[in-house]
Amino acid sequence: MDEIQMIDIATSLPQVKIDLKYATADNITGQPIYCEHRCLLHPDAAAALARSAHIAALAGFTLLVYDAYRPQKAQMNLWLACPNPDYVIPVTQGSNHSRGTAVDVTLMDEQGAIVDMGSGFDEMHERSHPWHLSIPTRKLRNRLMLSAIMLEGGFKGIATEWWHFELPGATDYPLLTDIFDCYPPQSAA
Image 1: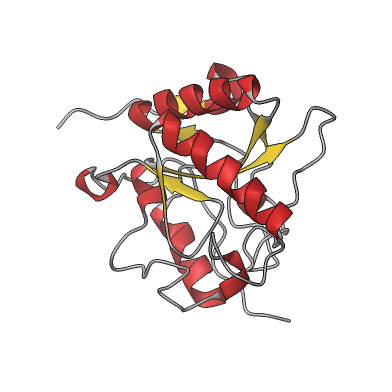
Image 2: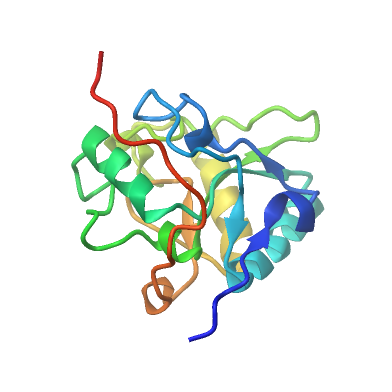
């Protein structure tokens, strides 16, 4: 099989903003996971993200990417922090992020402020479900807008995380050999 040439979102889609959460301590582990700040996607997912970014711009928004391709080694860090298959795919199954076919995103408004979705990224709780009844209507509308933008671009959402979108048939894509290194899992201090 030919090696897939991943697309670097920072260079190929400059209209998309990036805050790669797993390259920082601002994530569920409380520690950086990625050794490098590289936002990569499979070409099919990058094309869908480009369409979604265009649609977002038409609506007055900018996409902000929190995660894209994820090395398989990184999945262990996430699983140790949240061993709940409703929110983190078990290491043995393999995440669609590790196929380069999934992206975690939110919206920024015309002033560059992050749009309030009613819960934070990596908040592994029922409030993170796209249509949870505890979320005020205005914030549910924000989630609906994000979902519509991503759906029209070619992605589909999942039932437990408002920020996660993946290509239909994402599991048909192969798990990729780790493209960059990750920090080993660390115990909580």
